[in-house]
Length: 484
Ligand code: 5AD
Ligand code: SF4
Image: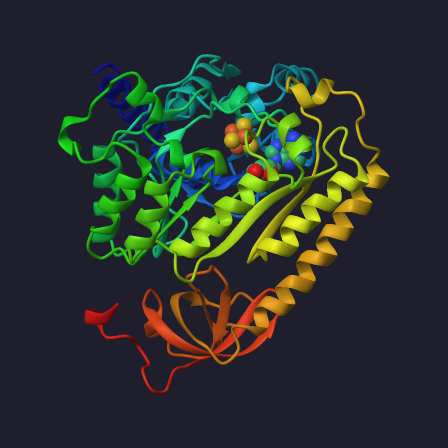
């Protein structure tokens, strides 16, 4: 009830800001820069939904904007430099046009960052955190009406708010957040400190959102969470029951129910944790025809000692065994992963274990990161921090291996027929269309634009490092509705 009345209050603030803006007799514009992961992108879609309802139109040029927003990430250091650089550039616009500058997201949960902003960029109007995103209309109203600066950051875990407007980036693929926060405390990671503890969304809210997306014509859903395969774990421990969907009590059962929603053709999810990859989840992926067979399985390191220091709670052997089990139970399984190089104390020999796992698993895609010290995490206080030069050397070695594997792996696609969800025209060539395979590979091909949003079959004719080239399969063409 408290949550519903809070949402009602924010919807009223949206109307109030809209009224102020309507009286201005000019077309107001906003720009938004999103840093970081898909969860942040999904948060930005929610911010855009609220802002557009308040009468602003989006512009990609921040010189034109009356309201400029940053949705920040703090997982690695480079985002900080980017934010401070952009804030410096905005000073001129603030002085010239009196624009409103708002900064939100994960970085704002870090005190040393908000202090720096207040000290060095005092012209920032709104600072808001991860637990107060839904209050943006109220914050903006106060800044417009009362002409004051505002800091709205909560240290306690926010509730799960439903029912605010959303403006999605695509009309074919949509992300649906199923849980917020993380309880794992990997020793390199800042996320548990800035996103709080695990809280799952109610099954009812998720199912209703996916059903609505299906009605609107969306074809692909990505379920998001820091640790998706522990969906409802905390609620189970607290014996919280959601009576309307008694058959959903875990991530596996959630997948099975979403798989039955008509109109949706593909289901993806990020990110699961290997330690929580239970058999019921493996069976659900194998059984559910809409669940893509590309699984993102973050490895982080291939060495058991480093994994222990990282607090990952699995060994090299357990990871490899899990991969073998998944490969044997899920036909056509492909895998992608995240890897960090240069974690404190990692020796050359221990790094070789990471290369060894990469060679053995043959990932479809590897997201590679250089270890970045994060204030407040155990990793930051560890001795034996690795010099930058060695980190870069290891990174390049890993990159070389990964790229050689991608080239080799791409060869396997040539001559095959792939089902591809057509997403739109190619960014580099308007006359071509692009889409993605089940394994999330980009395919570029020539075809009529009427196929956008459909699943079609393509013959793969050639490969390039980051994409494949396809041709409409002359035998089958578009797959008839009854066999999709
Ligand atoms: N340094 C480098 N990479 C990190 N990641 C998380 N924290 C750090 C850090 N401090 C990577 C992990 C995670 C991905 C989202 O970001 O690989 O899976
Ligand atoms: Fe960070 Fe580990 Fe939680 Fe992922 S599981 S968000 S890496 S603490």
